Image (spheres, rainbow, N blue to C red):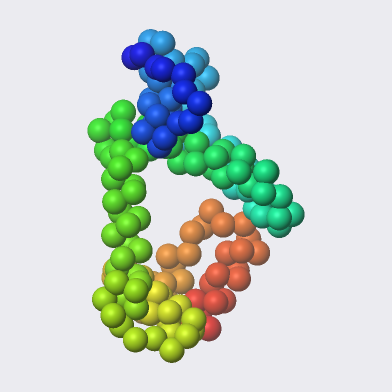
Length: 161
Protein backbone atom coordinates (compact mmCIF):
# COMPACT_ATOMS: atom_id res chain seq x y z
CA UNK A 1 0.00 0.00 0.00
CA UNK A 2 1.23 3.43 -0.88
CA UNK A 3 0.73 6.29 1.55
CA UNK A 4 1.04 9.98 0.76
CA UNK A 5 2.04 12.30 3.58
CA UNK A 6 -0.35 15.26 3.96
CA UNK A 7 -0.72 18.43 5.99
CA UNK A 8 -4.30 17.50 6.89
CA UNK A 9 -5.77 14.00 7.09
CA UNK A 10 -9.40 12.83 6.77
CA UNK A 11 -11.14 9.88 8.41
CA UNK A 12 -10.52 7.91 5.22
CA UNK A 13 -6.80 8.62 5.56
CA UNK A 14 -6.88 7.54 9.21
CA UNK A 15 -8.61 4.29 8.33
CA UNK A 16 -5.86 3.63 5.78
CA UNK A 17 -3.15 4.40 8.38
CA UNK A 18 -4.65 1.87 10.81
CA UNK A 19 -4.99 -0.70 8.03
CA UNK A 20 -1.32 -0.16 7.11
CA UNK A 21 -0.23 -0.50 10.74
CA UNK A 22 -1.95 -3.91 10.88
CA UNK A 23 -0.69 -5.08 7.48
CA UNK A 24 0.65 -8.62 7.98
CA UNK A 25 3.74 -8.02 5.83
CA UNK A 26 4.69 -4.35 6.05
CA UNK A 27 2.81 -3.23 9.16
CA UNK A 28 4.09 -2.41 12.61
CA UNK A 29 5.26 -5.47 14.52
CA UNK A 30 3.37 -4.35 17.63
CA UNK A 31 0.11 -3.31 15.97
CA UNK A 32 -0.30 -6.38 13.81
CA UNK A 33 -0.11 -8.86 16.71
CA UNK A 34 -2.67 -7.10 18.88
CA UNK A 35 -6.05 -8.64 19.67
CA UNK A 36 -9.21 -7.29 21.27
CA UNK A 37 -8.06 -8.68 24.61
CA UNK A 38 -4.47 -7.48 24.35
CA UNK A 39 -5.53 -3.84 23.86
CA UNK A 40 -8.56 -3.96 26.17
CA UNK A 41 -6.62 -2.38 29.02
CA UNK A 42 -5.29 0.32 26.67
CA UNK A 43 -8.86 1.16 25.63
CA UNK A 44 -9.85 1.66 29.27
CA UNK A 45 -6.73 3.70 30.07
CA UNK A 46 -7.20 5.98 27.06
CA UNK A 47 -10.82 6.55 28.05
CA UNK A 48 -9.81 7.53 31.59
CA UNK A 49 -7.15 9.87 30.17
CA UNK A 50 -9.84 11.52 28.01
CA UNK A 51 -12.08 11.86 31.06
CA UNK A 52 -9.22 13.49 32.97
CA UNK A 53 -8.72 15.99 30.14
CA UNK A 54 -12.44 16.79 30.27
CA UNK A 55 -12.36 17.16 34.06
CA UNK A 56 -9.46 19.60 33.72
CA UNK A 57 -11.09 21.41 30.79
CA UNK A 58 -7.79 21.00 28.96
CA UNK A 59 -8.74 21.50 25.31
CA UNK A 60 -5.30 20.62 23.96
CA UNK A 61 -5.22 17.40 25.95
CA UNK A 62 -8.83 16.62 24.96
CA UNK A 63 -7.80 16.86 21.31
CA UNK A 64 -5.02 14.34 21.88
CA UNK A 65 -6.95 11.98 24.14
CA UNK A 66 -10.09 11.88 21.97
CA UNK A 67 -7.77 10.84 19.15
CA UNK A 68 -6.30 8.09 21.31
CA UNK A 69 -9.79 6.79 22.15
CA UNK A 70 -10.68 6.91 18.46
CA UNK A 71 -7.54 4.93 17.64
CA UNK A 72 -8.70 2.21 20.01
CA UNK A 73 -12.08 2.06 18.25
CA UNK A 74 -10.43 1.98 14.83
CA UNK A 75 -8.02 -0.79 15.88
CA UNK A 76 -10.90 -2.94 17.08
CA UNK A 77 -12.85 -2.24 13.88
CA UNK A 78 -9.82 -3.12 11.74
CA UNK A 79 -9.43 -6.41 13.61
CA UNK A 80 -13.06 -7.27 12.85
CA UNK A 81 -12.67 -6.18 9.23
CA UNK A 82 -9.74 -8.58 8.91
CA UNK A 83 -11.98 -11.37 10.28
CA UNK A 84 -14.75 -10.46 7.84
CA UNK A 85 -17.18 -9.60 10.63
CA UNK A 86 -17.74 -5.84 10.30
CA UNK A 87 -15.87 -2.63 9.51
CA UNK A 88 -15.77 0.92 10.82
CA UNK A 89 -18.45 1.95 8.34
CA UNK A 90 -20.79 -0.64 9.86
CA UNK A 91 -20.18 0.82 13.32
CA UNK A 92 -20.90 4.32 11.96
CA UNK A 93 -24.14 3.09 10.36
CA UNK A 94 -25.25 1.25 13.51
CA UNK A 95 -24.59 4.34 15.63
CA UNK A 96 -26.46 6.65 13.25
CA UNK A 97 -29.39 4.21 13.13
CA UNK A 98 -29.49 4.07 16.94
CA UNK A 99 -29.31 7.85 17.34
CA UNK A 100 -32.14 8.42 14.86
CA UNK A 101 -34.26 5.72 16.54
CA UNK A 102 -33.69 7.04 20.06
CA UNK A 103 -34.34 10.70 19.19
CA UNK A 104 -37.93 10.66 17.86
CA UNK A 105 -38.36 14.21 19.18
CA UNK A 106 -35.73 15.33 16.66
CA UNK A 107 -36.29 12.98 13.72
CA UNK A 108 -40.01 12.07 13.90
CA UNK A 109 -41.68 15.14 15.39
CA UNK A 110 -42.51 13.61 18.79
CA UNK A 111 -43.36 16.35 21.28
CA UNK A 112 -41.42 16.37 24.56
CA UNK A 113 -41.59 18.71 27.53
CA UNK A 114 -38.03 18.71 28.73
CA UNK A 115 -34.95 16.64 29.39
CA UNK A 116 -36.80 14.17 31.62
CA UNK A 117 -39.12 13.23 28.74
CA UNK A 118 -36.11 12.79 26.46
CA UNK A 119 -34.38 10.49 28.95
CA UNK A 120 -37.54 8.47 29.62
CA UNK A 121 -38.11 8.00 25.88
CA UNK A 122 -34.46 7.01 25.40
CA UNK A 123 -34.68 4.31 28.07
CA UNK A 124 -38.02 3.01 26.82
CA UNK A 125 -36.76 2.79 23.23
CA UNK A 126 -33.50 1.20 24.41
CA UNK A 127 -35.34 -1.42 26.46
CA UNK A 128 -37.70 -2.15 23.58
CA UNK A 129 -34.88 -2.49 21.03
CA UNK A 130 -33.03 -4.89 23.36
CA UNK A 131 -36.21 -6.85 24.10
CA UNK A 132 -36.15 -5.96 27.79
CA UNK A 133 -39.64 -6.21 29.25
CA UNK A 134 -38.80 -6.77 32.93
CA UNK A 135 -36.70 -5.03 35.54
CA UNK A 136 -34.54 -8.14 35.94
CA UNK A 137 -33.71 -8.07 32.21
CA UNK A 138 -32.60 -4.44 32.40
CA UNK A 139 -30.59 -5.10 35.57
CA UNK A 140 -28.94 -8.19 34.08
CA UNK A 141 -27.92 -6.10 31.06
CA UNK A 142 -25.62 -3.91 33.18
CA UNK A 143 -22.08 -4.72 31.98
CA UNK A 144 -20.28 -6.93 34.47
CA UNK A 145 -16.96 -5.37 33.44
CA UNK A 146 -17.90 -2.06 35.11
CA UNK A 147 -15.88 -1.19 38.20
CA UNK A 148 -17.80 -2.33 41.29
CA UNK A 149 -19.06 1.09 42.39
CA UNK A 150 -20.17 2.02 38.86
CA UNK A 151 -21.90 -1.34 38.52
CA UNK A 152 -23.76 -0.87 41.82
CA UNK A 153 -24.83 2.66 40.89
CA UNK A 154 -26.10 1.55 37.47
CA UNK A 155 -28.07 -1.34 38.99
CA UNK A 156 -29.61 0.97 41.61
CA UNK A 157 -30.55 3.51 38.93
CA UNK A 158 -32.26 0.87 36.79
CA UNK A 159 -34.13 -0.61 39.73
CA UNK A 160 -35.25 2.84 40.88
CA UNK A 161 -36.55 3.67 37.40
